Image 1 (cartoon, chains in turn purple, brown):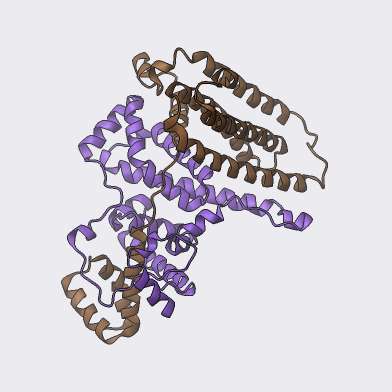
Image 2: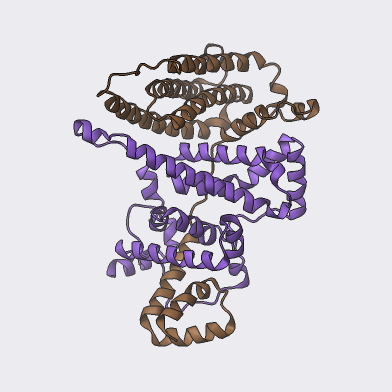
Length: 229
Length: 232
């Protein structure tokens, strides 16, 4: 606790931005300040106006590559970040991002209402990530590690260094089960509402809320174990 | 209010979406319950921390691959759209032979892969007993190459601005062709993870990409344009 107080005194800035290997404490306000309207409607990636998005979808359906590229540019960062939080491997996440957008543009004709496009695209992204995890698990179960063969420690493709740089919350969220991770990333990291998450994942609002509660509890446990909370 | 009920409300309270009535009831509970107060504060810290997490950016090589794949799936596209969707625009025609050569190399590699897979053959590719060892070794090597490519790609990206734009575009095309080969190999491995031949081909493709990126870094150091003839 003393270490936490010192860290707070010496580094008054946002401690989560400090991605060094040291364990920093998360700031914990004594009294919860009320959320402002801006904070309540906060979104990490503000969406396009529906009229702009509709025009891009229509042009993309006609095969206009420029419109597709604009859609890609708009959504590449949230979807890549989502994929990266499932793979912890940049190359694999880029492969997933490619798969996701190829599926999106190949099946764009299935989008009847433009206002459902974003949820539909996220659903494709999340299912692609789940499918990647399933195939990775089955691959890992089949392959034999080098340590079993010749006593060497197998080098994981996962970039542990990059993972450790990402900070304790990032590390804790990557350890969440896949569905809890999806809800936590969509709600707490990206700022989607429970209604939007419900549309993306096929949940009710109540399920989305209870999943978020479970995810936050797991992250809390993990941060407490590490002495961050 | 019981703690179980309070816990159900704390998430919404932290998110600022609780009704006034429920909020007042919860606040009254929090004043007298240290555990629930701790939980609310911890959740608030987690939410604050999550909002500050990084946003990751994919490399510039991803879009050309998506565009190529979508283009390949739409052969019936009208001529004027096909014209508009060329992502390198005017550079496409003068550098057509370069891309054709790269594509030929890619086809040769993928074609070789299909032939060496020998789907018609029933004989095992390697003797029983050594398959697992070889597979593990190949996976290990693949991990090393992926790391090398990641590091080199980041280094190349940091130099892209300083490169001759024409040279940069030719490199992009060659890289896209190599990535397509890698992608084809990975797709085969995804379907058949124990396919040693496919894994060996993937390593060859990775090695080619590492060599290419290393050469590109060398070109960046010695001055753009000087080595373009030998590279191509």
